[in-house]
Length: 170
Image (cartoon, rainbow, N blue to C red; front, side, top):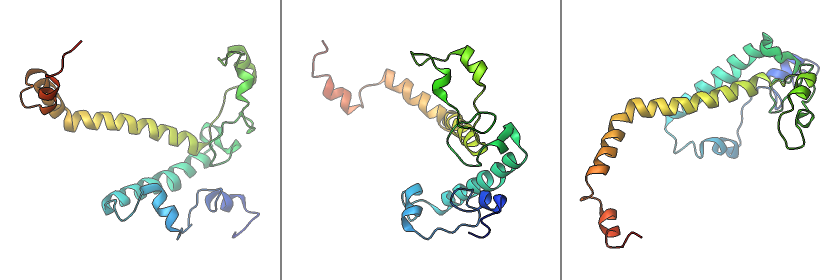
């Protein structure tokens, strides 16, 4: 490690930080995310890299160091939830015996907090789901509707429908 006593350097580099400046030469690390970098098109790899740099090296540090959502009280990268003081959030303290939210206990114990990187990853995941739906509607909506309508009208060209028509429907 470059400077083990420097908190900023350890947050931005290293295995427990954002990994800025790290170079990975292990083939297993390369193929674990993409399946195989030989198969995935180069433009897709560049797209992934630009997204990674934008989120992990620009957005996450900006969110953390501006103390957005009180994120400086928590580790920069973690998948755990915390109290506003930075301690681990005891989820069972706000649940009743049937594992439902006890609102009184929740108000007394306090809101749960997510580290900046964890919150950003959740937001990106929800945005990706919405983007897939919108992309499918915009780029393939007419084809889907056309195929759906033709499937209701015309069964003559469907080999599966021809074969299944020989069997009785009970």
